[in-house]
Image (cartoon, rainbow, N blue to C red; front, side, top):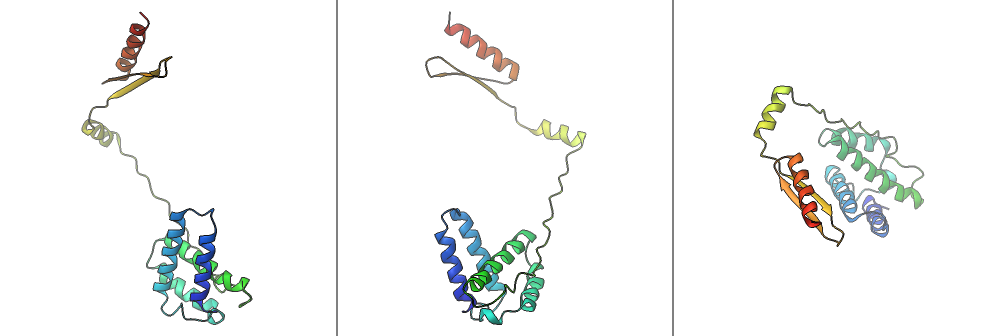
Amino acid sequence: MTFGEAAATHLRNLDDNLSIKPRTRDYWRECLAALQKSWPGLNETEVRKITQTDCREWARAYRKTVSPTRYNSTVSVLRHVLNVAVEAGVVYSNAAAPVKRVPVRGKVIALPGVEQFNVLIAEMPRTIWIADAHRGDGKRFVVRADEKLTAFLELQAAIQRRFE
């Protein structure tokens, strides 16, 4: 069994799993395409000839070219495809199992200082407040105003006019 044959089986398994959303399937296909592009000759390679060292060397090079999230997803695809060969009895163990995932760096959130915040507020367009209330007949009262308090006062006045 070649890697390409195992990959085709893996893709059929993905398509048969109805719990996977279409966009997720597309993402896994993208990761598989990236794996095949970054590892020349992989599709034609017999799965039993793929070693842990091969997987580690590919991972070391690939890690430098993509984000941590994409790297981890592509390693996962490699493992899944090689698991197809394990389940078929072609190989005893998954050669990609020892390949480590990399930590995903969280984004640093920097809040603006007081001066920056005041500049942002000054540059914002005016806020329009919308207040609504359900009427008894299935319709709604809706009012718009520049200030929140004004919106609610106008809503209250509209409701009182309705019942006068």
